Length: 425
Image: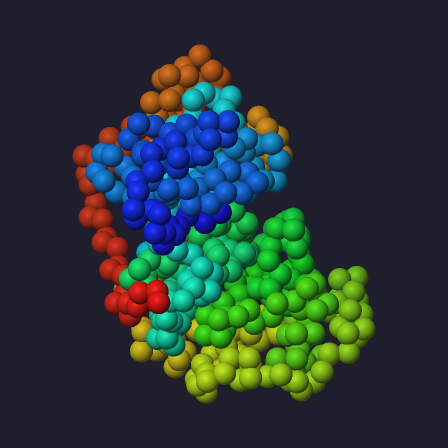
């Protein structure tokens, strides 16, 4: 559930519904928000919670609040929520959603989590399938910003793994942020496989269909290629019904050469044998039967080359985020100030634990305490609060020393100038 603001309807403009109307009937579970956050719109709902647009009464700013109900009821889902919180808190880039706040939990034995993030106007999926006029300049600006966000993310050792239009949020001025980092992981290590149940297959790189455990940053670049083609054509590039159908659609657009496209597979082992057996069964065509230029009509030669470099079957030969930004198709949008990298790799040490309910709650409680240390005093009789208080004592002492000798803080890069999208027809 990515936070975004939908365009107001005629009813929204003629009448201002009260809070109860916005939240729904009294029988429906209601979010427990602090007094300074006033709900103005419910943006979305899902199996595990809802997203609200809220007005912060303290300064009038607009924020999106993701309410996750009973976050620890499913171990893997709870772990993804913890990952998202930790990653959002570490990110500092204008093209990535970041953590504005993690609302204080009522006690160490809590169930619901409230993640506060910047509000955005709309997600890219809604923009692409709306009546809004989108030119190639808009598509280029979107691609450049997505790649800037990925360059920063990958430099921190984070792979998004679930890039798709609905996970990219866009403002009216065409600035965007990548969202929904719950499935993000590091480049290596033991990972759960990405199943169809949790990832939309239309944007999945071929290596994830042939070798699900062998992924790295290149999977995100494949997704960028699929997204960019979809923005231009305003229809999905590879709307496959399953992995077999996906691989056939990919080969029909790009062609397939076993020696060239499968050189990245492990030299031996059961995974290699399984991948080769699948490819041989499919009998993929060597030459495209419906090439990219037919799928993205009117695309320039530079655009088609850009897409082919992103949609290279062999992940080891696929262009990187930095390389894609420097491609002639986007070079006119180059802005070194906006193409920054992370100051240090993201630490995944926190992720090495068995996700029991108690372990998940203790770790998310600790994240709340980082932002709201006052809950430690409130919960002083609880063991987890006492342990966290003891851990914070050295940090407080260090903070005092740093305050006495402040270092100059670098200013963040300004956002790039982008074309403004015309109003929806």
